[in-house]
Length: 149
Image 1: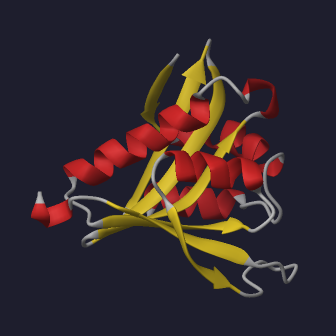
Image 2: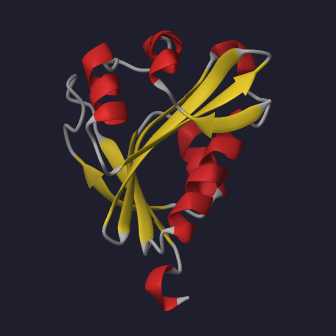
């Protein structure tokens, strides 16, 4: 088991994993663009016995990071993979001197909210109608040391 940078060879596995986790799911073109065209994107996968069990996609622009996407395969949940991926994101963001990390999470996704709160994210505001189905999202923020360390 290990975390490594995502490659183009990982796209099909990540697409399958994402399809089981989110609605609406991301398309092949969206992931490919993140991987190949977005200079601000950082993508990592958790690999266990040659299987991709989880991934994380976040952006760093100037002093702010934004969690774009994180998912763990259903049969791999509860094993600390989400925690490990979050820890890797936080490590990279600290290394890049980010001041904070932001994310949006569905108001009903208590499992994810608990994960984020475990790492010190706080609910900053509510984004009404954030998702395509009209559901709301919490905007959550985690302060880091950034340039003040």
